[in-house]
Image (cartoon, rainbow, N blue to C red; front, side, top):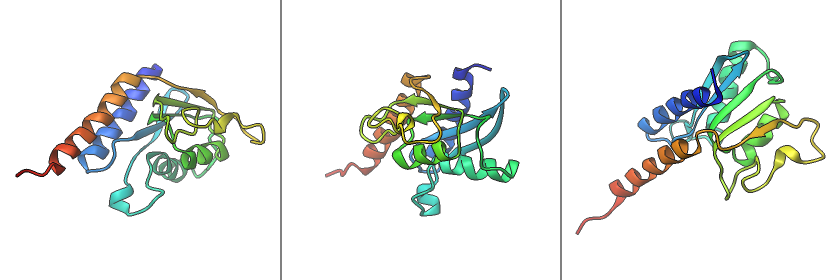
Length: 155
């Protein structure tokens, strides 16, 4: 499968998050061309700051493999990971982080700061940005457009 096909799988997770009323961010972990785990945002349903898609993905992957190391894994995320999630992926030694659209406000893979390139890190994942950027951004924007529409006060 291609990067675009794996990003499409991450977008399926984002769609499931949106259907549950969560911010639509999805992620998949891929090893040797096979999806090993999936994750989606569940901050609201769990009431937890670490309910980001990347943390859910990591929890699911650790449970499935019994290991926290990601040296052999490519992580596909529909939105560039925040600082917290980027730090976790660096510490878990992700091989590659493949992002849909960039986050210039809080992205940790180059959108706002490039934590992956920091010289002090013991691990430096390869970062690929912009895979299916238009599609992932459109999915994200559509969710917030609907939220604003529902929250609009009528006279």
